Image (cartoon, rainbow, N blue to C red; front, side):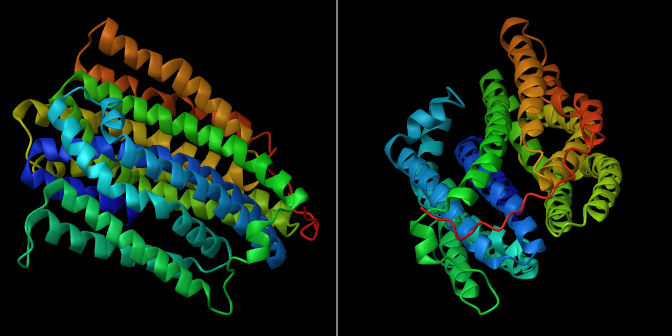
Length: 430
């Protein structure tokens, strides 16, 4: 549902004008990078929270909640300030086209307010997931997305007597829906069976849990930043190759993110399921769950490949593109179909099973090697030194996930992730 917001932005703006769609797609890379910081904090909270919930230690989870809110709140404030004070400079990272920069900067000035509160609402939703309130979390996210889509239609196209705002309408729709989402999160979490922020634990720290949180958070955030900035680098490379290449890549990225929801959801569930069992001391069952989920990751990968191939005619005929951009899009989606196998296997196995057992360092150094040592240099060289065709450049941005599979399987079978991370130390504070 969250990925559907970006898809609707692209589809609706794609009906207005190609540059509007492309500029917003590039501008949202700023939030994509912000999400890497936020995801580092919420993922660390999920790893520890799932294991502590396995032993029903709500006191420790309250400390973890406070740590997540402090961590994510700081980065949300930083990105909000950047969007308000230097939006044009942020857009120049992704494109040199003056029209795209102007459209994107206007978008960021409004959308920046949504970035300010996104980190807080994600902390609430993460705690709901790990404490068996997944339905509430999903219902809130779904409601926010439905509102976002409705507001998008009204504000982008100027329905019900409101002037058409194009890309600025998309930004305003996102901001309004995020405000409502946070308000509902706070209201729902006030219920008796929910974990909610405790002022003492929000303002103060816990030495032992803080050490465990940093131990999980730093490699997770490092890995996510390596992946997120690397992915943003791919977008920047395609943005500087040409306007048609950037437009095709923008559309391909939206539908890639939609298809990836399948493996992302399974990966999140895998981390919680494995973490619950390991935290409860059921190491044998946790290991068995991990093996089954690893096998499921391959099935998910081939299903996702088939979905991408089946969607090609639908996607190509949905948005308004130039003939050249349309031809690029067809090629990109064929390449993406192969990429999806690696993406699904790695997401479920690494971000789900391995992280669920606290084996978080592997994610970071595997990304450094596969993405930063291999894929990004290849993409840069093919685009700006060798001047190879656009689809070859795009293929270089996809080699990291597929090439990582054998290495991931070797790491998985070492079973370093089969361990209990919990300790009874939530009363130790500073």
